[in-house]
Image (cartoon, rainbow, N blue to C red; front, top):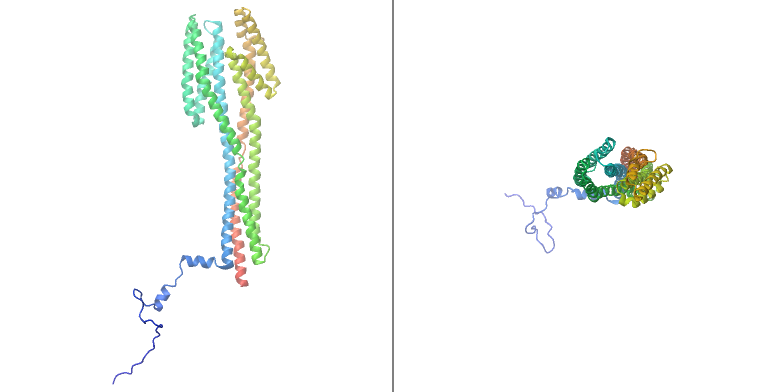
Length: 433
């Protein structure tokens, strides 16, 4: 006897079949469970769904804003300090190049005046010439090491200086023998110095002055802080939105984050503005004085060595000294001008020997004495102004790295406070729901 057959009804869609469509397997309970595991997109949708989701999104943006404010502030501080350091280095290079310029003209002035006497120059003149040329050689080496950008130009300058020195030695040898050709060698040396070497030095000085001025301008990097201001405004907007949405108008953590970042931004702006103001004062004060004194020094030495450019050099020196309002230097220069005018008067009157004697005299009214007094005084004033400039610049921005670290840490603390403040509101919203 066979077992009874039980008919189990199967629901068939209207107009369809109980079979699964071609190419598909029948969906089972196990299949439904395996296909129901949410992916990364599903997790993101749940986290950002509804008001809690928007809170999380805005909280993430708030963290980014806090970190961005800290990063921009720290970078602005370090950029200001770096600009001041580069300004100090370029200023020091300006002084080196100016010193090379002065010593070249000083050496030529000594050589030119020594030849006026004829025969072998005095040991004092020889020592002054060799001292000036020695400082030129060492100055070129130091300048090339300090500023690689000037290396190629300084290399060419060294070659031109060697050519000049060789011609002077030929002139000296012939002059010792009483041969007229010695004067021709000296004329050739002086002309080559002004045509080939001096323009290179002038270009190096100008290039480093331009670099210094650009770094003076870059020392005030406060414009970068506009990004920080925008970030702070974004955090305030977040706090306002959160207060309206949750009807809780004071979030201590979020308020603390905003206050902390506001203080960090204020300290950063104050520090950078102070560095920029101090740098500008140095640029307009000691740096400008050093440049002006250097111009006066080179003009005076060129006037001493090159009679042809006397009027132009005299005007340059007097203009520069007038800008400085230094009565003592002006008085010393006027003494030399008076001595020079006496020399010119003697020469124009046909008293050549007397003119040479007065020009090379170290007596109180001698041109060599009066010029030497001015040259020593103006060089010392230039060196003092240059040293003050470099030391002042090196003293600026020293606290910037420490402040940058503090600001960065403050930004991290503020980020944590933003996360904490948003988390509190999300929890409160859940309990209220």
